[in-house]
Amino acid sequence: MVESTKARVLIIGAGSVGAVVTRKCAKNPDVFSDIMLASRTIEKCKVIQKQIGSKKVQVAQVDADNAAEVGALIQRFKPDLVVNVALPYQDLSIMDACIETGVPYLDTANYEPPNVAHFEYKWQWQYQDKFKDAGIMAVLGCGFDPGASNAYCRYIEKHHLDEIHAIDILDCNAGTHHKAFATNFNPEINIREVTQVVRHWENGEWIETPPIMDPGCVHMTYDYPEAGPKESYLLYHEELESLVKNIEHLERIRFWMTFSENYLTHLRVFQDIGLTRIDPVKFQGVDIIPIQFLKALLPDPSSLAANYQGKTVIGCLCTGIKDGEEKTVFIYNVCDHEQTYQEIQANAVSYTAGVPAACGAMLMATKAWTGEGVFNVEQLDPDPFLEIMAEQGLPWTVTDSEKLP
Ligand code: NDP
Image 1 (cartoon, rainbow, N blue to C red):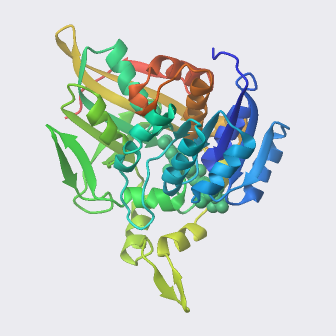
Image 2 (cartoon, rainbow, N blue to C red):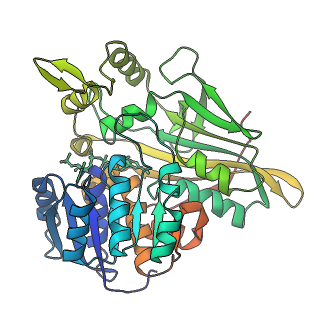
Image 3 (cartoon, rainbow, N blue to C red):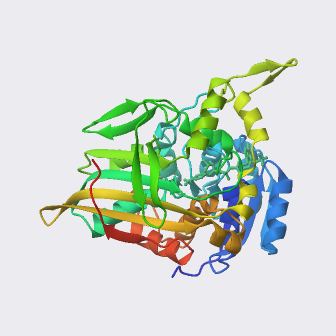
């Protein structure tokens, strides 16, 4: 059980993940006495405010690319904590505003410059001393993956294995949304992520393989608990970077995600005709960025929730040593799209991203997680995090398993 406190939380970003974070914070009035949801388009905040129906949720308009604007909002609302669930492009400006005002920070995705499809922690890790000097904590990547996945690895190291040598993070969405093509979270961020050259880490070096829509990409069939066998593709994901740094004895780490043939075919076509480009293209005298135009055409991920069936299964397959013997365990969560819709009108992808962010915020608000500086989730105690996630709808299971080749 989380301790009672009366914290004020500022949530930035009224998208599909922001709606889940706001609802979960509102459902925990013992922890959060006051909530402000701020975003670029205030109407989106008002829709969420109305759906929640709690007087405790205030709304505001903010351009989070502008640190001074975020700083002014912080000065006005005086939060104990800022949760950033806008886009990765806003991470640094919001972190700047937090340092300026001395308020702790949490996000779910690492910084990515808008004009380069490349995400890595280096920009946010450079804030280490600034957060230390300001005497405040920043928790990076506190969604499901990254987030719960990082905590799962630390939890296995703490309770099930003496050393971890290999990690395979497995992310399966076995749900059906009945659209010809849609992404489960922000289409621009999602497509930038999955069209990248793939990297995994083995014996001290990063190994590159072709992107998931290329013929030479690496894939396998994995038999997921409750979801069954699904084609899973090797993908680069941001938690690999921090886990390589923070999990001692690691020899190999990979990330796999399931994709349907239909999804990959669409992606190939978008790529082939230039719709995934992130550079400006002149159209009728104005510059447009094709991927942003594509985003405007695709379904809003939050609109998928009402008609989503099936489950997500996300977990970490960890191989290592226990009492001198090699051992493999799988730690995972199963989340049901229809149940998350019934609970808070969200699909399971937004739910699994937003609930850990709300839980991390609760641990920071109640000082179960404390520190000065910038932290990835595996650097914090996993026990209260897993416990509170289970209480809030994301229980975990650990089973003995087989090592992957
Ligand atoms: P959405 O696009 O649905 O929502 C993003 C929101 O941020 C929108 O409401 C948008 O406003 C707002 N926003 C964008 N730019 C600004 C700005 N400059 N100032 C203020 N608000 C702004 O995205 P999602 O909810 O799907 O994703 C949110 C974040 O969660 C992303 O960073 C994503 O990478 C991350 N994520 C993390 C996961 C994890 O497990 N770790 C999984 C899934 C997502 P507007 O409505 O005006 O466009």
